[in-house]
Image 1 (cartoon, helix red, strand yellow):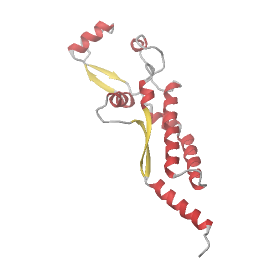
Image 2 (cartoon, rainbow, N blue to C red; image 1 turned 90 degrees about the vertical axis):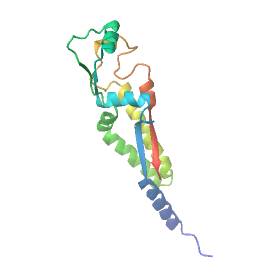
Image 3 (cartoon, helix red, strand yellow; image 1 turned 30 degrees about the vertical axis):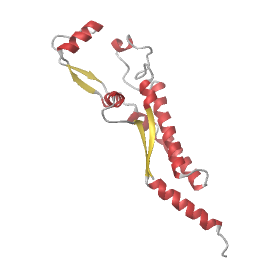
Image 4 (tube, helix red, strand yellow; image 1 turned 60 degrees about the vertical axis):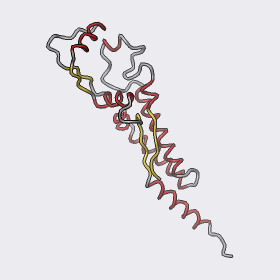
Length: 171
C-alpha cells in the first residue's frame, strides 16, 4: 500500500477550500424581501428620497408641529449612507480581516465557509458600529431630534442597527 503524502493531501485540501471560497460571496446589510418595511427604511436612508406632500401628510405634519409653507410640494429625506459609507471608510480594515480569514483557510484552521462567515460577521459589526459611533451624516433635523429617544443619527429604537446582518452565498 502506497504511503500517504501529507504535503499532497494538504495541497489538495487548500485547492479544494480555495475553489469553494472563489464561488462564495458575502452579503452585508439589511437582508430580506424587497417589500419588507425595514428594507424600505434602509433604502430610504442609504440613498435619500423625495416625497410628494399630500394634503393628508400636510395635515399630519401640522398636527405634529411641523408647519410646511403652502407652496411646499416635496419633502427631501437626505442620503444618510451607512452601508456604502462604512465600507468606504473601512476598506483597509476589511482587507486585513479577509486576509486573516483566508490565512486560516490555508493553514487548515478554518474551512472556506467558516472564513466567509467570520468576514461577514465582522463586516456587519463594522457597519453597526459605524452607525452607533455617530459617523452617519447629515445629522437629524431639530424636528426629528425632538421626537427621538437619543441624538445619534439613524438610531432610535435600535431596530435598524439590529437588522444589519450578513449572509454567505454560494460555495
